Length: 270
Image 1: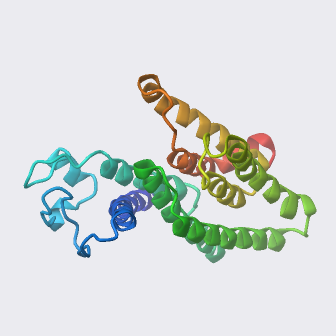
Image 2 (image 1 turned 60 degrees about the vertical axis):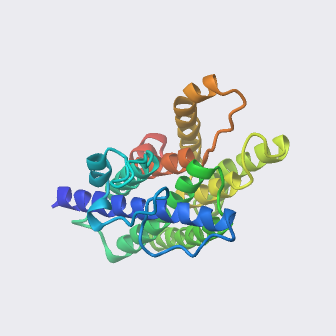
Image 3 (image 1 turned 90 degrees about the vertical axis):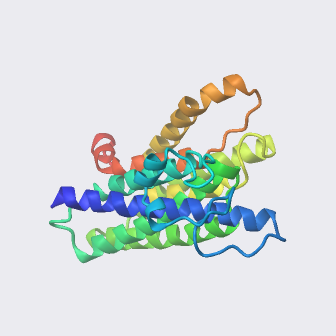
């Protein structure tokens, strides 16, 4: 049953990743070309405008079957779609491992559902930032609202299990926000936007608010930097002064930290 649960989450995540990548391209096209013709509801090849059939939209499998090319014009689709589908599928599985579906209470499912919704929003931000180097304000705002709701839900859970504590209920969440959001804000202000973008600190604050622990925030920060260095180092060696888009790495670090939160909390003592 647990394996079926994880497989189901991967399929759902892969489908959502495909949809989010498509929407990211549509959003960018609308934002950069105001005179563009109204986009249709169906997915099309950006090169020849071939309308994709249902069997061309099967996550991961269709990309592999077509070898990353359009069925009609043979134009390369690119790896973004495949990475988005695999990434969101694995991210949903990672969050799914935090749920014990056999013993989970209704409140646990509410929090999990809210986390999944936030994951979809963060996924859109990661895809858009990876493709175009920007974090859309609307997506950031929606993610921030969702993060605040999750924070309230988690605070309610804490208060239901134990009396109010300034450390647990106030200082730890604020510390997590300060570490992930505050650090990137300082870097943005000091560098005047050269080191990090103006939306990175908001994304960091969103992550910190849902992690609710300074130690977990530090772990997420370290994972972000390690992933960014490992993935982008070959590119930086070839292209000097290449700006790193941190969004995808920050979201990946958030997913990893959330998935490992139970183990990490037992190691660091909460």
